[in-house]
Image 1 (cartoon, rainbow, N blue to C red):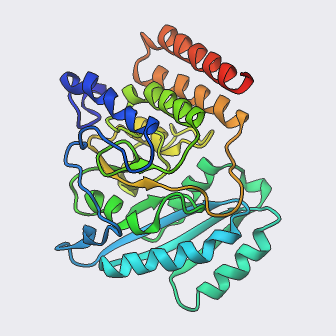
Image 2: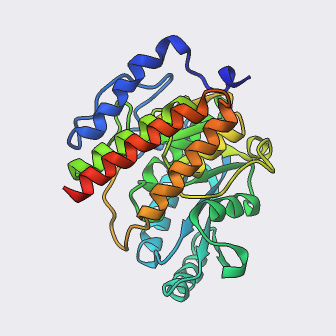
Length: 313
């Protein structure tokens, strides 16, 4: 049933809304209670593989004109994975762009040292981040699959810690969360923090995560198979989509620091915000069909008004 699809209880619901407060605080001031079973991965998250022996992990990174970040991402990632005693691969799923040729060139060079490969999608194969992630999952070599961004806002050093709960069988789905003790965000503008907090609050009832919009997450192919034919790859929030459609029974948040973009340009746009609201409506209809229509309509209208006020003031 829907009530068993996450690891939190109804009695703990109200206090956990307080976990959205760190989004409004400066970097380093994140507070609130640690998520159930949460842990601080430290600076590099190297303790994630301790005591587990050698484990296997496929890291999927969707890209669109992100060639400036690929080399640093790869070197930092495998340094962290090696220290954590994890056997892994890095699969870059690239949507054709002006940076594709350079991305291929860099990956070909990195192949000499690291287990990295690339799949370049032509426009006929589809476009967009979520479908790229799903394609990458389908091509992954290993059972355990992790998604992260290419822009280095997700620190590669946190990968072992984020993957650890899934690799050790503790949970079906783990999330790199900004909103638990030890996590946080870089120097965001106030309006960005407010919008993020509002969008997070809208998605919170759908999952047991304090950061349901996170694109830094880990699960397994077995879990993903439960949502086959139901997962809708629209917008950017594929982690939320998988959590809900695949009825993940246990979800665990792992604290991360969400950094500023190092190079390249953000792909977030007004269109993506609209797609997110459409995605929320669809997920609520799937999870709570009776009450979803009115509740989502009111929530979506409120968020649209907030966005309009903030950007037109």
